[in-house]
Image (cartoon, rainbow over all chains, first blue to last red; front, side, top):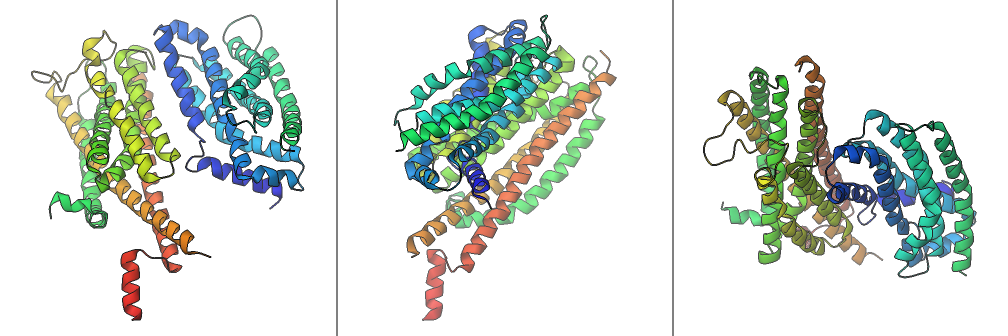
Length: 222
Length: 242
Length: 61
């Protein structure tokens, strides 16, 4: 088994175990969506109109909260130092860890989104568009979050700093994700325009994320 | 053998091994009867055959609430009496109660769409049952996050006791607030307001589901006791190795 | 409202209930087997509970 596959399998296993926090993201997602009508009132027409935006915000926050799973535990028990000393390129290792993170945090969000969209009275077209934007957008959230997680890894109370670092970087993904989801339902802009930009953002993050994160890790862990 | 004897996990295992097979068989028989009753029950003059979703939805609601009730009693057992089997009961009940609550939400949603035009509405009863579901998921997450079973049990017990406040809210929500959901028609002062031709199949279905709950709970408790034994042995193995 | 058009929802509701119950049963059965396997594996390695160890010691003596 190549070292990269080994890391992937290890991260997946740890995430699924006790204390791993794999499905916590979906639970938080559901909680945030449940809270919104309590704040906004039960008007189903209003909820339907802002539904995609609520779901995207909830997904962004849920991804954010799960980010410290990426490096914190490994840093604490020393595995991160071993990884840095290893032969596998750090950029690839970091990308693989992000992949494992997305599989256990992002994919459950994609699966849960249409069901939870029902709570906000979304119709079939809006649901389909939303799932597509999640499918393309959640990897971007993970790979952008990678950067913040790497920068904040050595800080003990880095939780809020991590959020402050990642949120501005994630804003374009949020804007175009919501724009695409809304465009499919209403508005003069066709779905394809913001969606293609979203795809571009994700592809860029797949490259920039690991490189920036690897550089940050090398700096932090001298 | 008194109930108190069951407090010993080994005796409980023996009890479970003896009871689960025949209780499971009885449950299957009762379900067969319940399905037969459901099929032969008349269609509602307003709702047509869709009223038969009630035979799933209402037992789901009752068992979702019963599950949290069982967990509440178990929580008291953990915190007040330190009863050995209380922890096991609490942990085993959570996924089962969550499952029935989910069944209640989903069947209710599928019933609501053709009847009242929407999969969901944020009224008092639906929201409080959804909150119950979230509480279930939260307590399950808590069990899975804390390593030490004893500490997890105490944390879960406290959360369970606080969450029990949701149960009266669910029950009386249809009375306290104006709501889309049907007001109480079975458990209320005075006679039930449902006609016997629908009430009987409903009660039989509820009985079948309750027996199912009991069987699942016994089996899950058995699993949990075995899991704790495995953990103890593994700790023993780790401490004597090398 | 047409009773016929409701059939999809009725079937879906019963299917959903079956799926939830099935998932619970499956989880319990799989977990049961996993625990029995783990116990058997540990027993093979000679790790036993205090009551089992006492019996073993008595046998050897």
